[in-house]
Structure formats: C-alpha cells, structure tokens
Image (cartoon, rainbow, N blue to C red; front, side, top):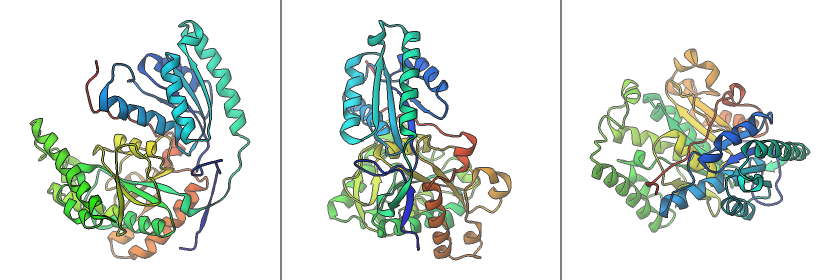
Length: 388
C-alpha cells in the first residue's frame, strides 16, 4: 500500500470532502415539491427531501434530526440550501449543521414568502446559484489517508460475498485503520450469530458488551412484533446464492469489519469521536443503513454484492465490489471492482486489497463510480416511531 494521500477538498475544519456538492435539503414533507423544483433548476445539485419532519416526537424526532443535520454536515457538502416551512425548525437545523461543518449555508422557508411556494422556488434558485458558483472556486489538494472515513455495506449477498468480497473489504478496512483512517459497518441484525465473535474485538470490554446487547435488543423487538426471521433473513436472493441460515450470512457480513479492534458502537447517524473501526447500531437494509453512514460523516462507501445491487448513496461515492464471476458478465457497468479472481483462487486477498486500495484513492480523488456516472443514488431516512 504505497498511497498515503488522495486529492480532496480541504475544509476549514473537520474532514476533507471527496466531492464538493451543493445540497438542496428539504426538511419536511410539505416542502418536498418546491425543493425538487429548486434542485431541478440547478444542474449538478443534490436533492435530499424528507417526507417526514412534523408530528414526530421522542426518540424518533431525535433520530430524524440527527439524520438531517448529519446529511447537511457531511464533508462532501460544500454548500447547503435548507428549504423549509417555518423559520424556527429550519434555523434549528441550520445552526446544528453550522456547529459541525464549515459548509456555506442558506435558509429559505414559506414563512419568508407569505406561504407562496412559487415565490420560494424563485428565490431559492437564485440563492442556490450563488452557492454553486461560490463552491466552484474550491480546488482539490493532497489530503492524508488518515482523513478518510468509509462505510462498509453489503447487499444481495451470496456465497462469494462471505468467502471473498467481504473479507476483501475487511482487508481494506484494516489498511485504512492502520493508516490512521476510520471505517464503520452497520446492519445490527446481520451480526446475529456472530455477535460473540465481535464481542471479543471490543477495544474495551464495555464495547463488546454493548454489541451483544444491541443485537439482543433488535432480535427481541422483531420477535415481539411476531416476525419470524427465518425466510426474511436470509432473503430469497441470498438463499438462491447459496446462503442457508442467518448465522452463515452474519459470519460473512462481519468479515467486512476486518481484524482490528472495535473502537466503539455508534448510535444510528452518530459521528465517531476519533479514528478507528466502528460498528453502527442500525437497520439491516442498505438504503437506510448507508444513509446512517452518510449522516455520521462517511465520505465514501464500499458496497459488496454477489449477483449485483444497483443502490448507491447520493452523497458518498459508492464503490461496488463483487467476487461472483458471472456478475461481471451481467452487470459489468454497475460494478467498480472485480474480485472474481480472489474467489477462484487466482489472486491473493492481499494483492486484491492493494488493488482495491489504489482504486479507492482514485475514486476519492475524483474518478466517477459507475453509480455516479449513470445517476444512481438516493438517501433514505429511518423512522423508529409513530407520528402524532
């Protein structure tokens, strides 16, 4: 591993960006259509508009707020235009983003336009254009690999995932952590059956115990709702790919965590306090899991798959990896890294990890992933409670 830097966008504080997006952030469902019109008029901008944001209370409201703020504060955001309904809630989000991020921030709400959504749209387009022009002045500079924070995800897994692609992602995570960087895996229910192996990886005993409790709490919640995990996890596509039990799937899934000590268990969408390897307690399906990563500050995501999975983050370049030899025949233009030679014992894991690390540096420095090239990507908010 010779690479010690990538070319990123330095920020006045916090991590550098691997992209420099203008984000249009619609902070509740009443304003979603207007936010969409604004984004459509600003080429290259990224739209994240939640359908929620009013009537939430308790832990669900807190979780939603963390996601909004974390998305706006992600290092890949050069500027954020917050589009809201009322000034009070919009300013709360803006102030919380400003406390974590040096991004340029503007706010416009229906309060400011006497409830005129068309007037809001026109004014927001002008504000957004000014922000886009301003952040275009930024230039990439060499940034230490220690500044990189990546999420490790898997979806539509098969036998090749646990045997090759996920261990490869884990080997890359080891390299990044050794270089002073940070990595995170999520999908708590997919540690079920492997949580005791993770327990012994905790940097301190309390971390290991927290991991076991998190898995038990999710399993208990599912059981209390009358849901049988058998037939739901592994899913039909996993079973077709050769995975027979959740324990088998979990042992493959946690291979993404490599071999370094686990520095801590993060609440959903919570940023890590220092460098190292982390687990995030969160949902077990990719769109929500990855949005939790992005809200915690990941600049990139490594996503392993078996036969293929088109989903990508909108804000964090998503590197698709598969070790399934036939996948690269069928979905070649959706996969960024071919690990098939590892699965077929024609390349060592170490050699492939070196190739993948070099590829990650290229994507961090501006090379488009396939998902970016074809416009694939979204962010998906998690709910954990009912509304008023």
